[in-house]
Length: 123
Image (cartoon, rainbow, N blue to C red; front, side, top):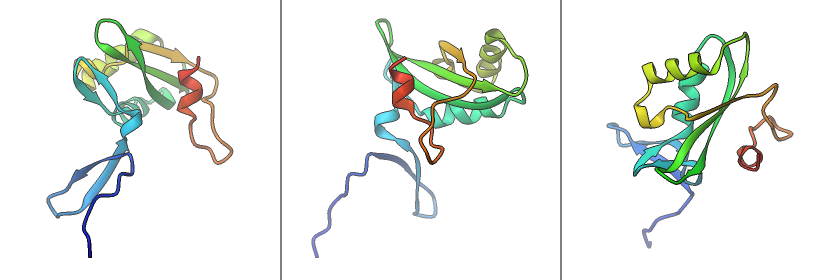
């Protein structure tokens, strides 16, 4: 039997138990000044805020850092951009804090309810 690799495009972590945990997609990873930012990590932090309903994070080109973190969010109750930024600064490393925060009525989704990041990239 030949042993090899199967490239799935997923980013994973090897757990102490020897198992692997998939944490994100390689093509969705954002590289800010050489640091890896996983959109799911930023989205999870954003969605823990009581005023935020949903969040989607993408990377956008940035002349200074290569890419910047952009967050698209829907709200349960009113909150402003500064409050979101402050919350992120308290809970994320500085390079992971979204530089752009866009409020939306709803996020674009597929027929099965998956957020369509490619549509957000085209805006």
